[in-house]
Length: 63
Image (tube, rainbow, N blue to C red):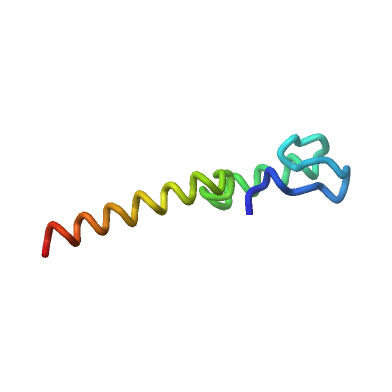
């Protein structure tokens, strides 16, 4: 899940804005925890598409 869609239970604002200490702490934790957490879902789909195309090209060249 991307943290730009999370809402803080402490201050009821988006976590990515970091309005309160709880938001800032959770934003830092999510950024450090997972590289893909901050990525846009469309960027993840594009990355997956490129990887699949690269594997298909490699399989085609070796066959």
